[in-house]
Length: 454
Ligand SMILES: Cc1cc2nc3c(=O)[nH]c(=O)nc-3n(C[C@H](O)[C@H](O)[C@H](O)COP(=O)(O)OP(=O)(O)OC[C@H]3O[C@@H](n4cnc5c(N)ncnc54)[C@H](O)[C@@H]3O)c2cc1C
Image 1 (cartoon, rainbow, N blue to C red):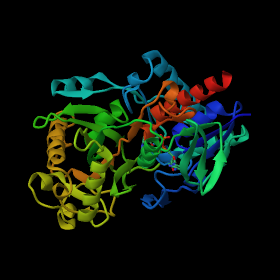
Image 2 (image 1 turned 90 degrees about the vertical axis):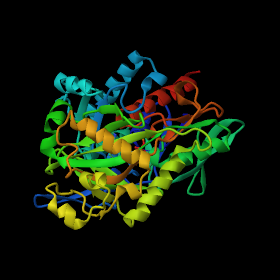
Image 3 (image 1 turned 135 degrees about the vertical axis):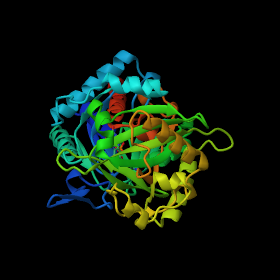
């Protein structure tokens, strides 16, 4: 039987393994822990407390494993699928991913389907509202779903090598023949790299080493916004994760909402060059607040095309200003050009759900352009979601979506230069979300299956 190595046990890697199991001898190599050993939250009495030092982006389930588990079933969310597959194929992939998740315990119903009132109000204010089919698993339920996938894959012969970091891909005569992990050579006929956004730089280095052309994709930089849940109530009743997009008046930059966590918790995220904010919401444990990412899109051309490098400088500067913690500021303090302090925050009626922060001044850490985009964007959004731009609104900074390095690929995401080397998911700059990452895993696996049929 031919051998396949999949690097990364995120949604892309797991879904690819699901497709390949039985047809190939499949090994998933994952640098993180098993899902059962990835704990992010403890419940004390009625309180939900986050440890903030958990393995947010590494381990079985990938970044998706400890995520909020919002499944967005749309070809325009989480990456533009039109670049890769036809609309009909995108719908087929969406259905297949949905069935797979439901088969492992995700809720079958779709309680939150877009409504039109919000869309009308948004349109009247120059904002695009994208109503989509969504499902919310919740960060408390998602580990069970991932655990069920893992057990099923093992039962079907897929091997998991955990706590093992792949250092490099082996390429001989223009063809991938295995990987080096923990100093050992592991042979394979096919290699699929699905290492996620946190290892995108590593993926880019591998590609450059073997002469595969790469492209730097735009990054998203901004803040995590936290408001009382009542402010966002109507929006989340319409769509659990309402997607708003707008262009700001001064810079004409694209700003969007992303990863809304109704009744959720802000959590710390860790980047290679600093710390940032992210969010969770659960099915069984609720806060009084709703949080969402509010991000400006940044694309660069010459002389610096490397958007990740730029994002890293922002993360680094924020870490310096925040003393190693995310910076927290009230919107009213930001617009008046003064830092927030614990005393000012205490006067506010919005209680931050993340306490391990440094009250400060976001404008000391983030580019002026991004700060203007955030202020103007929230002002626009306030006309659709009244109260979102109140003085008491909390902003945690930075939130950076390192959008990754995209290698040039052929059909089914086989790299342009190296045969039998495939890529999938966020790390290859193809996607930004669980459903699309899983879909690219299916596509790459089908490419491998086609090759073994030849
Ligand atoms: C806090 C948080 C909340 C999120 N919430 C949502 C949400 O609600 N909905 C949604 O659609 N998306 C969400 N996302 C994004 C989503 O999790 C990702 O888009 C998705 O997981 C990408 O899947 P992937 O398989 O491409 O990569 P990942 O899920 O990142 O998985 C890649 C895996 O590869 C492993 N790896 C990397 N390098 C190596 C190496 N060299 N050797 C071995 N293993 C390696 C990593 O440890 C990781 O486990 C969230 C992300 C975060 C961080």
